[in-house]
Length: 253
Length: 347
Image (cartoon, rainbow over all chains, first blue to last red; front, side, top):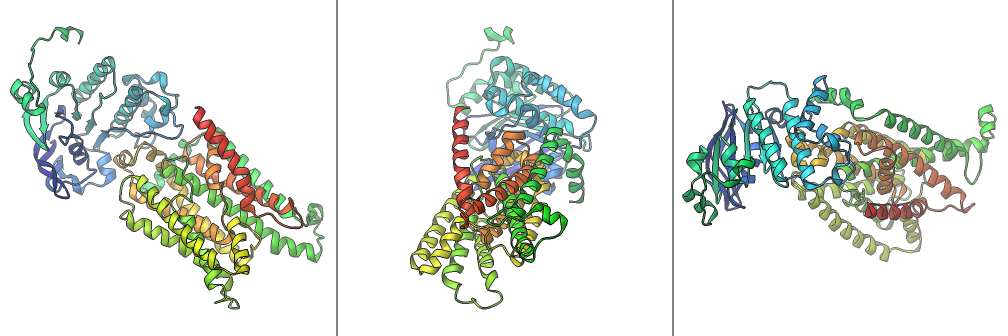
């Protein structure tokens, strides 16, 4: 059981934004998408989350066609973090995180809320007004909301997934590392994770599978050791690359 | 669908705190006090004592039951409609400066009304339907605008409310051209009627107009209040809300339709009353918080009470004549709005 993406193509007018996308997202694994700007990474996440329908091809959640799922049903199977928008009214951080809770309020709520805010280090800002926070703090709040969302659902379905569009953008190196460890813990607990990263080192170190995208196609897909090499990276990014297997700064990690 | 409604009820009090519940009761009491004042004060004061003892003269009874009560009820419900519509639209468009005028609905209603004053007024003058001509024509104007919005945004599907706001600006501009032309060709009597209507007034509140108005506004209120939590969640973005299982297209449809009905009906019967829809929600937020379970109900009651008060002011300031109530609300609302803008800039 997994999310299966089968020969997906996405066209807008005559432009083909995504083509021949085929791979699986397995529960318990971190799948990372790498690629230059405009490669179609965010578009792919929007297709997989079910915001838009592919022009051809199929996406299946545990053998069920994504198109056949209702909005509510989709919300029970996956949560999504995307490039977030401004909030124009004085909602507190707690208000925003609570919005992720899509279940009835039960005894678990406070417990899970505390757990999630601790993980994302937002306990100290939980009563602050969201819109006056810094970009990095806002990112952590939205990540907490995404986590609360997926944890608010009891296990009605076999598998649950999290789709993260640049979860580490705007974060300093401390939080970058802290949050990716949380993501790894989630995967160990059985969640299927798909995320977009720009940091090749982190992707290499923490992913189970990596998809290298260019011009709307997944050029290379597989284990980090197999996919990340000088030839592939040079082709994807159009830059001269050199890979150090033991970089001098690795000890800080 | 059924489960959804139960869900909203079950969690309703989760999203509104005790202080806010108390504030709402204060708003309700305040509204009732304002309405009572409205019944008895005006260019002709009716003694409350006499009313309680039940010995009003025939003239006083006539004034109370045929003029004061329908007028106060009308202003109360129009105030509630404008305040609530403002709060919903600011929430939906995630824009603190949105108001019912913004998506062009008021302008459409106004164009319909002006059309009926200038072009059709002679048509049905002595027909019994004559008094309904202006409201019907005005609501039609509002509905036409909604239809345009609906078709241009492909059934509200188009994501990004900015698009809808831009359409609203275009519709506003077109409607003011229409109103301008009609004003230009109108004769003196029509021009006078038109001017008074543009400034807003409750002077021609009659039971046979007031009852359908109240009925339509009530239906819209009942339709929109259960959406409060969804309007909260849409603050994090339409896409994000839909990923949490909220049908954003349906929400937009409900909010825009019900606001349009409320505003269209209000404008049709009482003319252009500015600033209530814009300022009241800000005031309510300032007093007690931003969550829409509190905000929508609070805006309805505060809009209601303040418009009843404005109407009392409009009746007593230049006795025996009457100030158009739209002038009163703008005179109070505009400086408050300016203060608000300066305050936002500071923070």
